[in-house]
Image 1 (cartoon, one colour):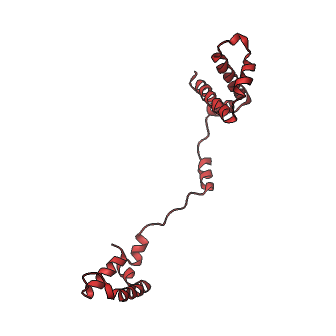
Image 2 (spheres, one colour):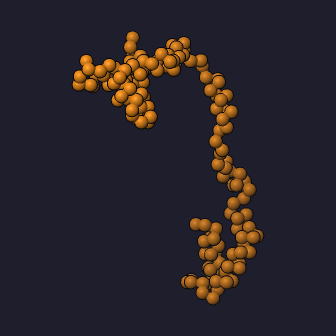
Image 3 (cartoon, helix red, strand yellow):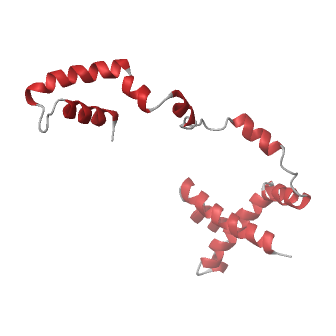
Length: 152
């Protein structure tokens, strides 16, 4: 029950009002306005100690600096993971992805002896939209990465 409803209940019971306020409404509204200004009800029902125990206000997000500090305290990445990361971001790996795409298109062509891989790559793959090319490159990248990681 809100403070307003509690006050309404007390005010009407003190005056013996059991139904709609009617002509008493302006008097009630004036008393409620004064009650809010005085803060008497709020002070009686919830003291300063209770306000302090109500909990902390909404917390702000953690600043980026604290996140950076936490990351800097993490243990170093193993040498194997560093080496793999270096491979996956290298130009050679990107070239391997393009070769994988050429192989993919060439394997799907019904007459492979009639056209070179490079010509098929240029005519079929490079004529696609940039978005579609990126989608295919990501698929091939994931497959090659999976092969590198699982190969022992």
